[in-house]
Image (cartoon, rainbow, N blue to C red; front, side, top):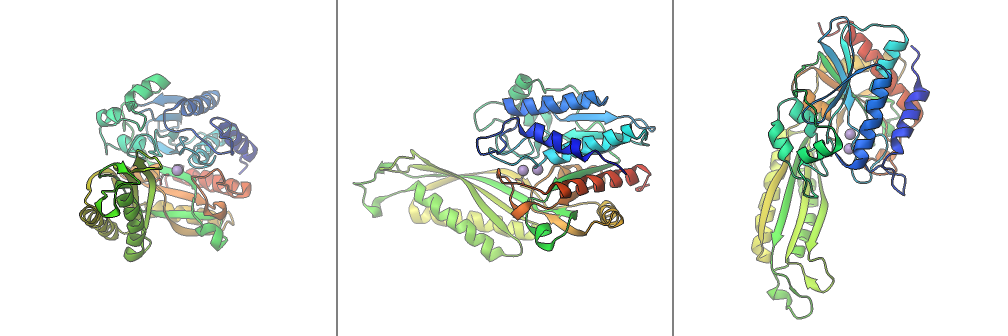
Length: 409
Ligand code: GLV
Ligand code: MN
Ligand code: MN
């Protein structure tokens, strides 16, 4: 089966030019001007390919090639928004590869049985508006459109205003179509496939995610005159919690990961004891019970720090998703398809969050992973060997081809 891999790479490179940072990273944070430009580029490609383009009320973009059984669809896709300084493959690869699959059907005069749709979901990264994976969450009715529209960005604007400003407030009702199946091709963003020397990951699970915003409030005071025993240092409380978060990961064990990604002391000046400090805690585990324990320990630790440092604290749960199990019929099909193509393959779990984990609530879903060099992602150094990108595309195409033959019937 001949796929146009040159076009895949050219398109990835063209999208990478939009919002490119000085260190070659990608900055297309959800619903900013660069995200809009990226969306416009993709929509142009969709239209040039002759696909029907629809935008829903949360700004998800769907581009469809009609099949013989009009109305039932196999959906593929991912996101093109990025973290503040990410790479050029996270999400984008899955979207552009999905377009390539559809274009291959068209160029080979294959009329699919099912509609084939490529989806670009809004705000997958969740760095500007929380929760992450918002577009797919709203699509599957896990959050109301109204609540999502009212979400306020870290820079103080509602999501609805930004959808309107960028021209992506669509009229299509969210979740109108329940796909026959959903597939997301993605870079692994972790080290496992590379370490094992394997080309394809058939993804079985996505780990649970818990994001908490924590604000300590103490007393801002003079750094020179305030005796150590009289301080109510919110910055110190935040630092103690940062260390405690690492300890929580260690004691829970079993793949528990824990990250403090944001620390903001106020007033953030050299000679002032911080009166306030905000930090974020990201906890993840594939085991729902272990994730609950980690969350319990976090709150226990926050109370302890408040007592010891005589500060107060406010917490806000920003994101809470349980671990997700994908459809084993599809992950097995992916693995068999990879074998058939003479590509090495293992079953694998996802450490990152993905739109597929939301789609799994409404239809049979699975993901395909390809290796990430040095396991690096959310970083301009994110890279995958073009040969692996091509292999992933081939597996996606062949898997869609078999799904279209009615594999799940
Ligand atoms: C999304 O990329 C996440 O896993 O944080
Ligand atoms: Mn992603
Ligand atoms: Mn990401």
